[in-house]
Length: 188
Image (cartoon, rainbow, N blue to C red):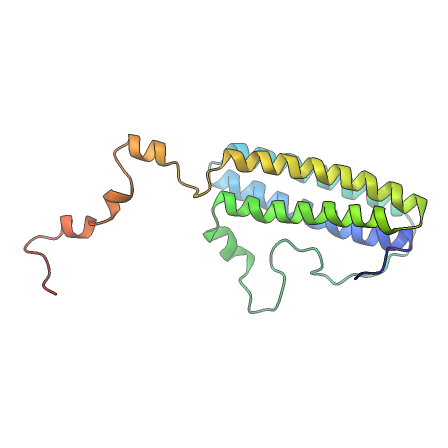
């Protein structure tokens, strides 16, 4: 098990890494969703990015002249973590559905919430305890927002009701090759 966070400097190093990664990723989500016409998800992502950026800036100001320890650069990454041969971020954005991207975000936000709850529950330092509780409450709010957004997005990423109403659907694609081909069906 991890050792409890023992210093304010160590706490700020973790908090800044978590908030900085969240701000960066939410901005990336905002751009991705806006490019694909997902205005509701782009708006949510933009709001979360702004909150994370503001919080990151506040943490930087609070940390002031403290000397913070260095953390591994991929410690809190949402994407692009792991060995060099793992899938890069661009591939994830090209292949993932909006719901899958929100699942990645939800996992990261829940992880941040659990981390700050753990810090609050294990530290003997009153200042760190208060800061961690504050951060855990904020992360809980983010978890709620992402959870509600996931209710908006269908699990398979396809609006079957609209597709079927327009005369499309899985049956249209299945067997489409046979309908287009002239002549007798291929022999086996």
